[in-house]
Each structure stands twice: as structure tokens, then as C-alpha cells.
Length: 200
Image 1: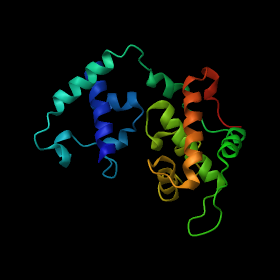
Image 2 (image 1 turned 45 degrees about the vertical axis):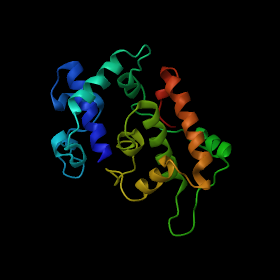
Image 3 (image 1 turned 120 degrees about the horizontal axis):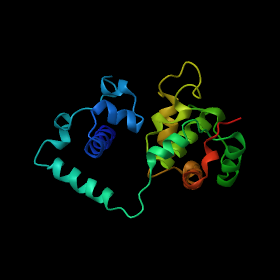
Image 4 (image 1 turned 90 degrees about the vertical axis):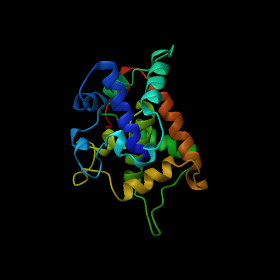
């Protein structure tokens, strides 16, 4: 539900700033038009979000948020950043460096083995989302043409790995890897134009 609120709030702010339709605002944010109608991901109006019905002035809260953004002395152009990183994916060499820095070895046995390629895709999505202020589901690594064939929408193993990489209380196994990915996202956010190149 928090994810739905985040999507709707972003759309509302773009509409307020650009006087655009919901569909135009979603396109500006890189949100697929299907998410406006797909029952599994549908972006609901505020009145349809149960935890926001009772006595909360959402209009006032959005106005304060918009004012805060407008008064930010150092605004970040996330739209441009998403454009620049539209085909970005962790390169194999960078991924190996990150794992070495975190002293991390992917689990290949047990109940939920994690293939290294899947983990790199998920790590790419997490880094991309942090650098662009977007959702990991919209990362190039999770969508064609970079996502593997037969995986048009990230489900199953991807969600489990992403959860491990984004939790606020990570296990010892993932703690250092999460820190290394956050550091890489910070570097990526400040990188020059050519950092948007695809993995070779």
C-alpha cells in the first residue's frame, strides 16, 4: 500500500507542476501505462487507499511537499537521471568488485539458491532505483531487453532477493553487500554522461 501511495503522490506532484493528465504524468515518471489499469499494480485514487480515509488532509500534505520541493536550493533532475541511465546495468567487472568489497559469495545451495546472474540483476535494480529515485521494478535489469526472456515482470526469486537487498534490518550475510551497493549508487548518481552504457 505504501508503494501505491508513493506512485500516486509522484503522479499528483507532476500533474500539479506540469498541468498534465494522469497518463502523461505517469509517462514522465517512467511508469508503464498498464499500471494505471492492471489490477495487480493499479494506481488507486487517494480515496481508495484505506489507511488514508480518516481525517487526514492529503491535499494540505501534498501542498507542503510541493512547496518543499520548490524551495530546495539544490534540486535533482531525476527525470534526466532516468533518461541517462535508461539502459544501465551493473557491468560484470563492477559486480565482481562490489562482491569482493563486501566479501560476499552468492548462495548456490540450500532451499533458496541464488544464481550469481540473478543476484547481479537484482543488485543492478537496487542500485538503479537508489540513483534515480524510482522503483526497482522499473529498472532496465528487470525489463526487456535487458531482462531475460520469459521474465516480463519481476516475480518469485527476484522479489525475495530484492527484499534481502533493501531491508532495514539485513542479515549478516547481506549487510556489507547492501552498504557496497549504496556506495555504488552514490557514485552512479554523480557519474558523467557515459555511465549510462550497457553491460558488455
